[in-house]
Length: 558
Ligand code: FAD
Image 1 (cartoon, helix red, strand yellow):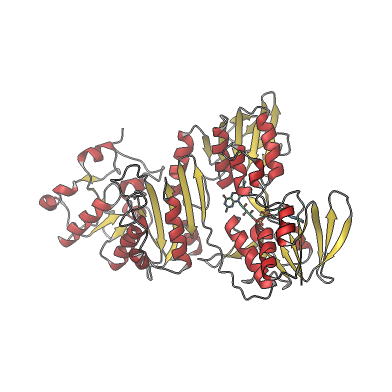
Image 2: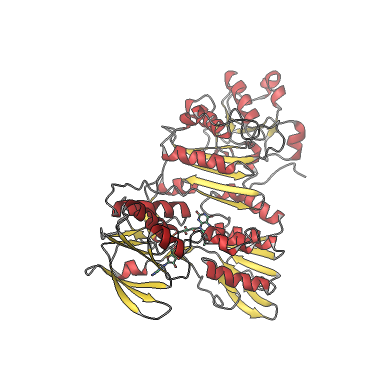
């Protein structure tokens, strides 16, 4: 069998190595247009920031190693120009000599990745304006940084943009992020990105949300980025991180099916519309594990796994790609944000019924020094309790919870399973009731009817759900001091510890939305009230969740 692979980084190199392990006698040709294979794109921002100090460390495997150990025919500086599906050949241009030749294949794996989008605005091609995809880009950015950059503008508040911002600040560069949307990190729900935006600003990054660059011009100070508001941002470097577009031109020219957003369509075996041609990684369009929608998810984990599975199938093994969950994580200074599965906005858009909870646990036992806080949001099916998605933002321990919940989603687990999960515990690492268990207790209690919860939108009467007799009474059961420091406008304060003797002060004919700081005292108050015959429900996540919505006004603060 002769296997030809286009693209020698995440998906392509994984496919090549896997194919070799399965078929030692196969002829495997790895064609990469750049000078490097198997380099660590994910490490590039940290090399620029100086956290990764040696460039060589970014070269995970060299072409020589792939040739020696894996007996791969690795050809760098080799651009695949076209595919002849009938003849089963690809046309290759040797970029060093200029020579072109036909390379026959039995099976072809396309792993060409995705190219950074360059917005269609004047000035994107000026010197000093960059995108970041590979080591070549990194070297050019590094040279410019070394030449003296005092101010940088990053267009796009996605994963790469935020990572770059952190690393530029690390180098002492005054950094501005311009993001078209009203939030950073678009895969997450907006309120879950508030702590990230706060952390960026705390670290001195200027974050301009809801704005897009209109033009970039040369000025004596370097570059000027013009915004529609009339504001001009001066910089010596502009980096664009506004998204990526699948490199699909080979596939399109060869008549392979592509999805509306450009990803090369594949089946569960990663085969394109031509069964002898596979597509993997950022260039492909795959199924979303939760919604079943066709999606393009440019992440390293899926690219590597898909490469491995395509090689398995090309070598005759039965495979079934389960789809992509979009499990992703980013560190932004001292804040970590992560997501797995569907977001609330995706569930809304697809019309899928869901319920949600928020909790604000510590990463490990509170009595052990150094516990860091996180906010966890869980989305689940209102009937079965199946976990549909999770997001977490905070300090240490965010990664572990999202990974556990990613496994739960893939295993088709429910919130009732989360209650039962037995997770490693010692005070330095977690809690005897881990945040994942706690999420299960809250969500399962809600579905069993033990713990009626009301979403903030409903409590505030803004989701159109409407209350039969008007808006619910907002009952703040925190201490008067907490109440005075900030509360939801219109809320009545009745501290939890005074609740039982003062029940007569509360209306029996009106819904009561109880809240505390994070939800726990609200839960206790709700139990007391319901057993006393009141129509009470707890506002999930309490005042801390309310504060994640920056557009919501606060009373009494200051
Ligand atoms: P790539 O890794 O892009 O490889 C495709 C290769 O194909 C390229 O080298 C290209 O030169 C070559 N090629 C394209 N067309 C041709 C052709 N016609 N002929 C020959 N060769 C061709 N993901 C995460 O999950 N976590 C992270 O922290 C993370 N950080 C990132 C940081 C940066 C700065 C970048 C750029 C990406 C990051 N990613 C991260 C995304 C991740 O790197 C990609 O999802 C992954 O590399 C995709 O793998 P791929 O094999 O599909 O494409």
